[in-house]
Length: 183
Image (cartoon, rainbow, N blue to C red; front, side):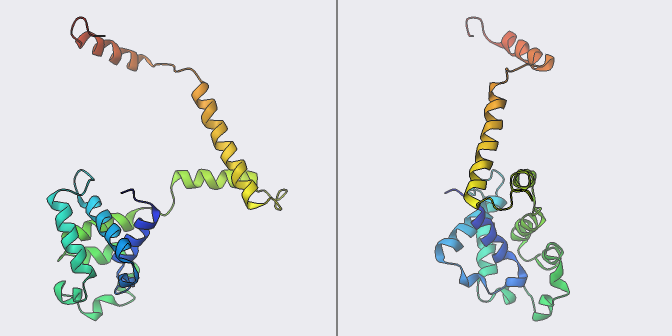
């Protein structure tokens, strides 16, 4: 199963204490994918098949269960708006009953909302959809961005590979370590 951005959003919504009791609006498939994503994030190898993943699944059910406040030893005062401003800190303070899920939640909420890829995309769109070209249709803008990025990728592939001295030395060492007759 591939994970898209929707599964990450569902996981963030399910783990955000601001939206507690709202995870029941997720469908069964969405909840299952969210649980599986939490297990994969908790596992050491990223596959979700080890004991940490099993513990994350159990703790996820604890958090998503109707009696999570009793199980996690929480009271309504732990959900005051002042405490919920910093979700990472909230999980650090009150997530001790579910330590694996606490780590997953902190990883999810520490992830920056922007990344270099998105910033690159916005800068290209700014170049394509400037003040002079403000009547450009959305579909045409996406097509132009597609052509722009693929043209750059093709140009990069056409450039000859220039091995560095370090790479050449590593290749020579590797060749010397190979048995005779293997090449």
